[in-house]
Image (cartoon, rainbow, N blue to C red; front, side):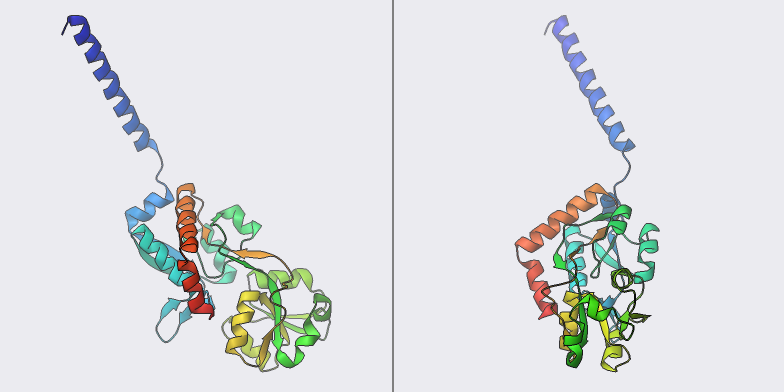
Length: 265
């Protein structure tokens, strides 16, 4: 090898070494992503209210969360190779707990809304839903439209802090709106004739009419509005991309359908 060739080879080596060092330095300068943090921690923190069957329910008999979204969260944890840690929240506190970074994602029948979108990302939707009434079967014909419901004599019951209360207050100006703090026993109030009607997600009304033979879901196939459910994620692109791909595969491979059928049928 000539002196000139040796110098050229040495120059290439120096350039390659400089490039490698620059790449390593740049990588070190990059902030840790949410996905990196979850993998490093070994746990996925999942916020959920535990009061919204069939999506999320804090079972007092087992002291464990169960439901469609709980099974899906476990599937996501398995895909990530981490354990799932559940953080209990409540609908009135959901936004504050999310922005305080108490969990990496929120699940449990969370509706996609623009105010929530401002604070974080949503996964691709896994369900189309919308608000529809549920009432005692004997009174179902009386509450077909918002105009029929929005009367001073009608007692509308809502759970606090979520999209149900927001929808009722936006659309009902004359009906009596009562806030019932317990979303688990709220339907018992209608059965006991202490309230007349509740407007909630069509998916929930269809389940509750199975659990309460006295109650009927009113036109769940023709909801008052359009809504979607998704998983509410802390704002990190890499985390969202992973969750979206996992959810896409779960839908296409019928894993999601199998889990959904388990809880709805």
